[in-house]
Length: 238
Image 1 (cartoon, rainbow, N blue to C red):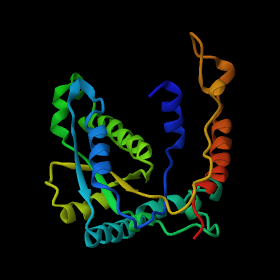
Image 2: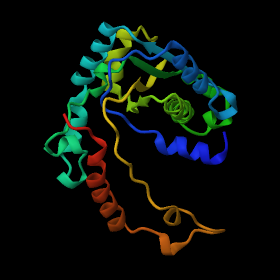
Image 3: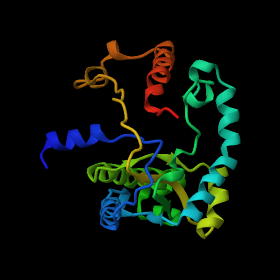
């Protein structure tokens, strides 16, 4: 793979919110997991462990647990001005239900063992949870890129504490192990629209920080307002 092919892969990756029920070949799943295994981590601590869920009944229990844990997110979102809210909390038409991953044939949970933070000196300086968060993010992104390389869609679902408390018993996860992210994988049920990224010239500085590119608080707020409008296109029609 040359650099242009790699860039094409990163641009093709999308957060898919509705999936076909078509099965994903086991060889694809194994290769995706292999990509996650080779992610980088501080002092090579490798905190990640992956739980692969294919059973329809367990997947439905997971979706129901996500439904039940939405109250916290919803309460936070609706407390903000409408322009700052995620699309589904703005009363916009044609925004599908939250758990579009219900039909995804494969769910991959990225778990992490906080004890592995002892591998790096950072564990002595910062919260160990931050160390495993950072390392698990690397593995999560690798899984997403690998899924895209297989021609599959995926979604990044952050596992917040209310959701984690509900799914740990379902998945049989030991208390000390953290469930960090959920990655539904499958064939997209729709063609995702082009996504938005800031121009490279806006985010690159040469030798020193270019203060002409510094954004004021109002600039950042205006950016988020714009982002909310643009992000609506990432959600499929019902």
